[in-house]
Amino acid sequence: MNRRRFLLSSLGSTLALPGMSSLMAKTVGGSVQAAKGAGMGARRFVAIGNLLGYQTKSLFPTTQGRNYEKTTLLEPVWDIRDEMTVLRGLDHGVKGGHFAVHSFLSGVLNSEAQNRPDGNVTIDQFLADEVGFETRFPSLTVGSEGGIHGGCQIAWTKSGVRVPPVTNPAELFEKLFVTDSKERQARRAEENQVQASILDSVLDEANRLSKQVNKEDKDKLDEYLTSVRDVEKRLELRQRWTNQPKPKAPFDKPANRNAVEDLPLLYEMIALALQSDSTRIATLEIGGDFMPQHLGIKKDWHGLSHHGNAPEAIADLITLEKYQIEHYGKFVARLAKMNDGERTLLDSTTVLFGSGMGDGNSHKNSDLPILLAGGGYKHGEFREVPREGINKVPLCNLFVDIAQKMGVETDSFGSSTGRFA
Image (cartoon, rainbow, N blue to C red):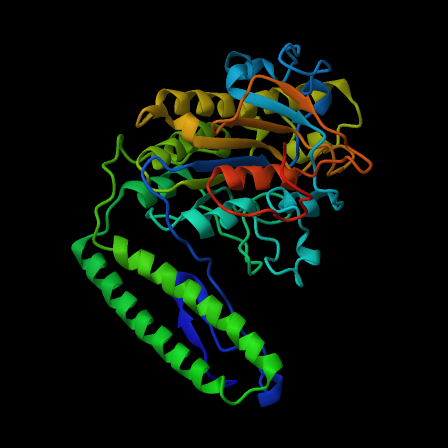
């Protein structure tokens, strides 16, 4: 058992039987998320996050309700304010500065996720497990692998594995629009057949071992078999799409430039992925390789975030942040112009925008900046919820609400205490 390992490199996972204390084996293992489908006109979800937060003093209004005032950072999205809601007071109650930003879509720190049934799964991957089976890609994760504290960490599976991102427009273009050659399709079909045979062998051996282990290890083996079945579902999904042509590209393959200039193009291709039903779940992380120099700002983003209340640094940050918010607004407006049957794509798509960092200067992960658009919600307001005490509302309560609107039956997610009302 210690030597038996089954490598499925093109599925991005290693399958091996878990350790059984009753058989004196070492622990190895792995899993891939499951997926099952929805239908035509299905709900969609997009989340956008950045690493270093926003200047909340220049973002949040002071007047609640529909008559809230225009702030400096809301200026770029003022024309779409009826399509979105500004939310204040939501967070996960976690601490850790840069190392807690990864909890933005999960509500759970990596270090505290080991003994949780769903680990630190993020809401995008949770939804992809439930409603992603009918599309070529159960989810799309877009971001960079550069910058501070490693690469894009916005998306995590139930097994605690970071979902590697598509890192640039050219790569995303190929993923969405470039169909494999006949030769490559034949190779992938052969790979699928081999991997299906490997899975059969894994299941056979696991079923044989189930007759030899004690109850504790039997439970562990049942969890492992669930992971194997998840891999089977992913393989079935890939087999389904191997010979299916991808949508026709609406433009030529783009050249990669930099994270600042590429941002509008990444948004456009995510919109096209939703419109073509290539996926219904997507995330975009604006990471540490977002260089202010491409906006005419001399200092680096991370250095600016530790502004110490220096007016010049804050002014540069507001320029940078207004650019990011502007293109979020353009993305929302773009979805509002795309048809999805008798409604718009924005009506079908919940778009969450914010950060796991509430204050980059002090490294606080509380009072997160959150904008919510689309999804059939009633918008046009600034809403502030209690930030402390027994009435505090966790951000994960909003994730429960989003999941239920997506048709996923769940009463809890992450650190939720109920459904956001």
